Amino acid sequence: EVQLVQSGAEVKKPGESLKISCKGSGYSFINYWIGWVRQMPGKGLEWMGIIYPGDSDTRYSPSFQGQVTISADKSTRTAYLQWSSLKASDTAIYYCARRDRESDAFDIWGQGTMVTVSS
Amino acid sequence: DIQMTQSPSSLSASVGDRVTITCRASQTINTYLNWYQQKPGKAPKLLIYAASSLQSGVPSRFSGGGSATDFTLTISSLQPEDFATYYCQQSYNTPITFGQGTRLEIK
Image (cartoon, rainbow over all chains, first blue to last red):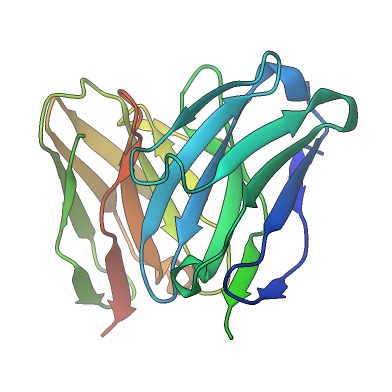
């Protein structure tokens, strides 16, 4: 079964760092782009960026450039989203999703990771 | 950035109704348009890709159309499990952008 499994919910304080993960299985991990999508409480979907694990080519949305870092580890088939200094406004659900090579659509989604940033 | 605008933002309908949601792009995106369904507490699910192609496993009551800047998602006969929020998304270029969503509620 093709799936993406994300790490569990996190509760952090402002200023703390965080790295969440997304592990792929059931397909050739290095040959598909993996994107990250934010959903703030009660709001819509926002695309943050995307990475090609095969060569770590990474693209960011201008809204998130410099705010987060996207990376991938081919050996463990895992993509990552990290923050160096969290803000309360980073409170959201974060989804990873696989971009299909033919359709360019996000065809497989992780279950989401809830990140809560509160003092 | 390409702006995606959906209408309506919310919609009330009954089981068995035919409903259409529209999505407009701020510039031409050919048919690089995808539709997703999201239910509360769940990840989005791909319904339609390339404007009109039905994703495997999705019921045939869902259909998509359009090209260039104007697109539609139609549900031919609403079922109870279809009440959810629907998003369009352009994959023409980066940054990838989503519409603001259309919440489909039971009348």
